[in-house]
Amino acid sequence: MKSRTKSIRPAQLADDVHVQLSLPVAGVLRDVQSAFFGLCVNAGKAVLGAMMEAERTALCGPQGRPDASRAAYRGGHTCSQVVLGGRRIAMARPRARALDAGELSLPTFAWAAQADPLNHATIAAIAAGVSTRRYETTLDRLPPDEAQAAVSKSAVSRRFVALSSAQLTEWLSRRLDGIDLPVVMIDGIHFRDRVVLVALGFDARGNKQVLGLREGSTEKTQVVRALLSELIDRGLDADRARLWVIDGAKALRRALTEVFGASALVQRCQEHKRRNVLEHLPDELHASVGRALGDAWRSNNAVLARRQLERLANSLAKHHPGAAASLREGLDETLTLIEFGLDEALYRTFRTTNPIENLNGLIAHYTANVKRWRDGQMLLRWIGSALTEASRGFRAVRGYRDMKQLIAALAKRGNDISALNRKAA
Image (spheres, helix red, strand yellow):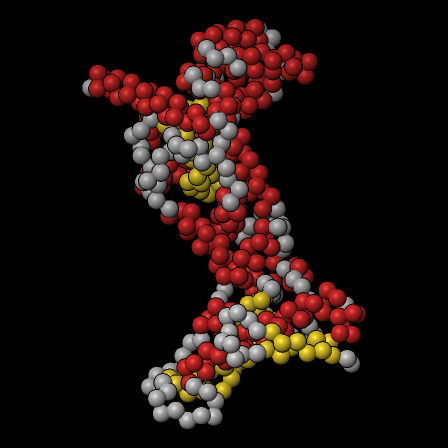
């Protein structure tokens, strides 16, 4: 077999360190892709070996030259593993022992063996929808004489459990004291017989902040109250007037009143309200009633919008009392943002729960490969990992430049509430 010899001199090595590589030309011609990756593996191992040997020489002195002042001596080689291409591969590691202590660490090996690249590859694969069972098949093929580790289903699963547990702990322990959160959305995402409540905050610059999670069997008031109490324990200011955007679930509304009282200003999702009303109507009325609801909610005058909605409810009351009752239930809370006089872009952002429902959709996509949830902790770990991945794509909300206007309106409403409370006392 023909071969060529190539000399590589990495910039990190001393000037007198050379690496000799044998390139099987015939093999490259037969299978360019696998041969090239095999070349990269061999080159990487050769460079790492040369760098480690240079570090051992710096500690022990040149081989075969006695040196009474040396602080360490050579200890041969041992089989170790380094991270390369989303797996661990075996390679010989030179050893150096201190004269008066144990084995010395070589910086190059410590860098090459660290778990961070392996962890990143694992999270990236799972985020792309790769199951733990198929992880190994997504990696480039190693040369036949190379042994690999950390790619089996159990190894990948253990690694993901550790990583997702750390991510979940980070989400659930992050302090909220230093974050100004004028707007919070809460919504539940259902997984068979379980539901997980997600709290998504929006800071003064319109940036999204995942605030907390709570797992339960339903969206009961007790579950919501536990989530809200946890947010307060982590530093959420319970006294400031804040806008809460919810889908209209009674348990959510009741818990907000119990925990925050009058300082919780609620915006009911207009899209949920529209769907609820239309579900009580025959198909031929959907278009006209939908237009009437949209016209009212597009008004910049809350009094006029309320009159339009009440007129619509009255017109529906005789023949469709269910639709009329659905419209009247929580009607004023669909107009909260109109009363603040916000510009159109920010108003359209917070008039519905779409931002948090989009996040829930990302969570559902991330967890789609899971066929069985063993327990609630497993569910929370996967959601924590999904939130970490989703947060990388967070951007400021549409209309974020008008957040100051919303904050000023909330502060004014908070002052009015405080004045009423003092007068009542």
